[in-house]
Length: 126
Image (cartoon, rainbow, N blue to C red; front, side, top):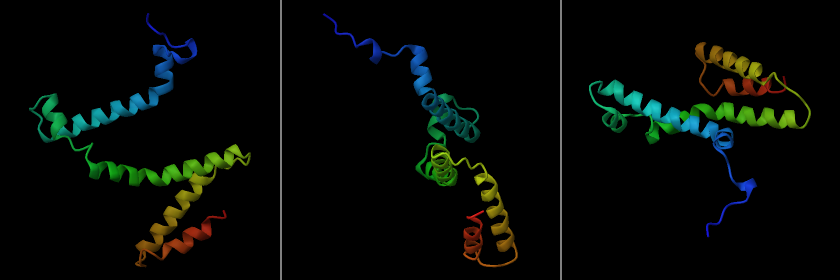
């Protein structure tokens, strides 16, 4: 006799899509970009050739993507904690943009790159 899972443990297609939709979309995006980067290298090839010659799912590119999104991830976690504790603070993006502008202005005036760090730290209490 076949054992069936309890009703609360079975997921329908809609519940599965609702629960794991973001993960499925992320996988679909990775597949799309892997094929597209391969298609740019060899436009005459087929999907298998485009997949194998794609450069999106390389270790170098994935580490670059993770490095670029790390700032937004840290800010998102911090803002989430602030909102959960009841102190709503939506000015984090504006302070980040201001710090970026000031840092760029300091570096463009010929100062060495470590010099903007104190100015960025001074903007943190804002």
